[in-house]
Image 1 (spheres, helix red, strand yellow):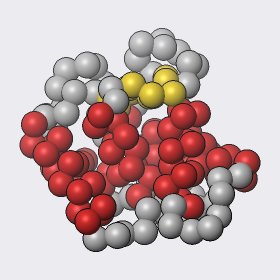
Image 2 (image 1 turned 120 degrees about the horizontal axis):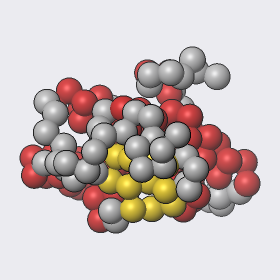
Image 3 (image 1 turned 120 degrees about the vertical axis):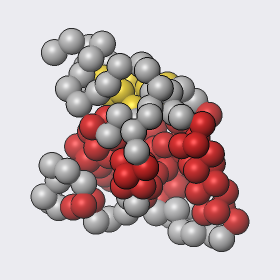
Image 4 (image 1 turned 135 degrees about the vertical axis):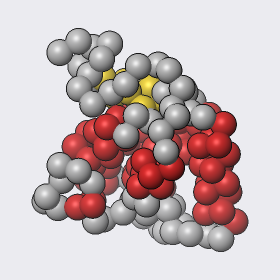
Length: 142
């Protein structure tokens, strides 16, 4: 596999797909929050991203992120969220290096993502990662 073009990824040209791919991604908490992180950071390591998502999962509770929560977030990222987002042309995930890189978003997509993040923050929506990842391609819910 070519690390510059992992399966399911697109080139670095600006994302110009129709709204369906973005709306599908926004419908899943883990995908949506991955895109939130990538709005302000063009590239992140999958391990760091797992830490952020696991932290969101326990935010607002007295729980702390332990190895089980982190492992669960990492598995969801590697096997569901990152492949789905790469397939939709929103990011590049290099499995060999563990690097997640945002592909250039169209202005309208960036604006929508920022508004979705603001909405969640303003309305106190529970930041837990969606437990039902079965809606994502290639995930049988196990």
